[in-house]
Amino acid sequence: MEEKTNQSQKILDAAYKCISTKGYANVSLRDIANEAGVVLSQLNYYFGNKEGLFAEVIKMMINKYLHEINEALDIGETARDKMSSLIKFFKEMLNNNPELFRLLYDLTGLAIWSSSFNTLLRNLFNELSNMIEEKILNKSNLKDNLVNYSSKSVARMILGAMFGTAIQVILNSDEGDISDALNAVQIIFE
Amino acid sequence: MEEKTNQSQKILDAAYKCISTKGYANVSLRDIANEAGVVLSQLNYYFGNKEGLFAEVIKMMINKYLHEINEALDIGETARDKMSSLIKFFKEMLNNNPELFRLLYDLTGLAIWSSSFNTLLRNLFNELSNMIEEKILNKSNLKDNLVNYSSKSVARMILGAMFGTAIQVILNSDEGDISDALNAVQIIFE
DNA sequence: AATTAATTCAGACATCCGTCCTATGCATAT
DNA sequence: ATATGCATAGGACGGATGTCTGAATTAATT
Image (cartoon, rainbow over the protein chains, first blue to last red):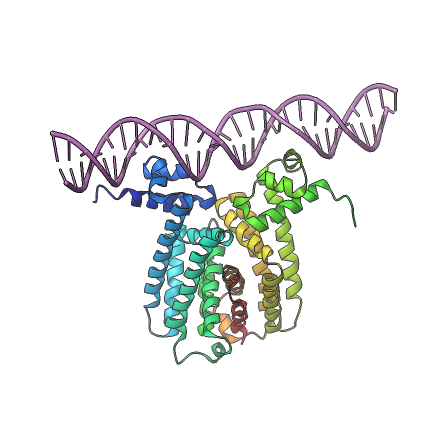
């Protein structure tokens, strides 16, 4: 129990929580300050302005995704097994930690309209698809149908399939569980 | 040349344009009123409040997607051909009318945090995946690998792959064209 | 112990926002 | 012509927001 965390870290954690709970568009600096138990002006003191704080939250999220997906892709030997592990990661995230995916979706939406945030998110998607390309697709014994497209394109498509199916799961989360749709990405390897 | 469009339609068109250009979070009612060449209070007169206006914009967009994708899925005979047509639709939209996709992404993000908008967007995704299921997957001569998963799940995955790949194209739109990644969705049928 | 720097605090500020209210214009019907 | 109802216009309102300033407190340095 570390009784006194860094003040700036407290703010960052609060910002992360607020944004992933309410969406970037519905969060004010006062919300974050209250959540952190800190006075409003502290946010500008540590992060300059709202954009600076949000940029740090994005970097925090990016590191989390890069680390966890990299871990998932280290599990299994064959391409098929690694794909299973990736699917399992997404399913568990949507079950146990859906805020993490909402955060990714939401901040990607923010990145559409802001060129500085665009760079950050574009890099994340590119790095993730590169990881998929290297750890799943760069196997000698792949199925024939995969050779018709560049491995980069296939990797982007796989990542997109995970992402685009996940948002549908989120949208339907208040009624029946449709996360089984994620399994269908496995079609590519069987 | 219809010199005098309906006032409410002018407002609706302006709202559509503003949101698809700047994102729902960065649009004020005054922006929309200026874009429409109309006084601010007219928006509340015709649409009650901001939420009512946004709901109409969403319904407008939903109808556009349902109509155009339904058209795309009527082209071609085999599942493979219809999938090609769907891919072609997305690629042309990203090239000629990227605002339309930004709008879908953005408003889906809005729907994550608002239960009333959630219903609208969830229905759109469900109807689109139903269309894919009925028009592409309900063919007798499908490949063996597709039978391991319910056609509903496969349809959601295909839609998700289109959607998730498209957002990557949007994020990278200022540098090289990566829309070739959309073609890779065809892997499923060959 | 004294001085300096870093941090925390409270509050003001200008601006923007959604909504509402009232008056004016205008067309139709009596 | 007069009265009625809808449409448009202009502006006010209370509240929320991001940013900034200056004082108070604490920590670090000499």
